[in-house]
Picture 1: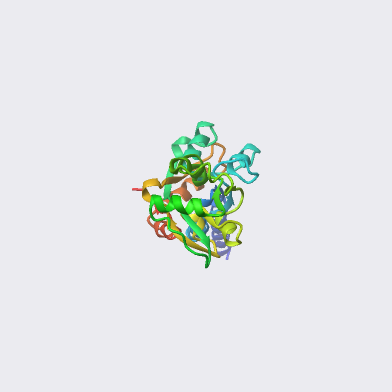
Picture 2: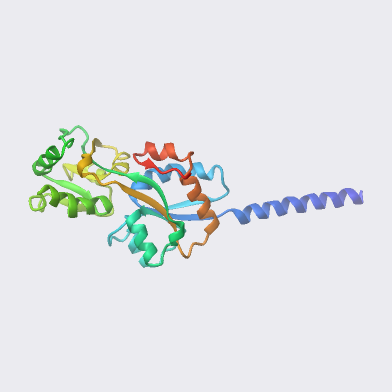
Length: 261
């Protein structure tokens, strides 16, 4: 009987030790992502959690700008994250500032810019550069994002097309809100943003990508912060985000996945 009780105590101790190790390995991975990768991450996080003891805690913010929920603003006021996912140029900037470990930067997906109108509205032609120029000049109101795509449109594309001056009164930069949402409720006739940010919005009709001659492809990348609380868990999540398993979901949300080799 004494041997039986001893064996039972030993088995219980082993089970408790295994439980404590499992709990110790579990981590809440704090991730903040800009809008372009949001739809993909919202679907990928549950898939990752089904195969891991870790949990993914997601926050959202623009890659750039000074809005209260923009990633630069949140980092500046001391909010802590393990992983940043945003446009590569912005991530590189955080690495230069010492906020992100440059050795951990990984490209996740390539993103392009598209356009949309309110559901049921006439669909203007944006299939060629000349058609896009004409559509921009004819639109009564235009919305574009305050992040990477909007910066490109307002500082490079509009001047290149020779319409920047004409759009000063009709084109508006949108802060802390999806461009598609603005278009869906009728506050803008025409909207431009990363394709992956337009596709999830109900109440709009997606027109397609802007012409390849004036398209901007931006890589959205992940990087681990210098003060990450869960370094190994963060590395594990990034490995999953660049896996073949994650690629179809990223593709479905309107981005071109970058699969690790």
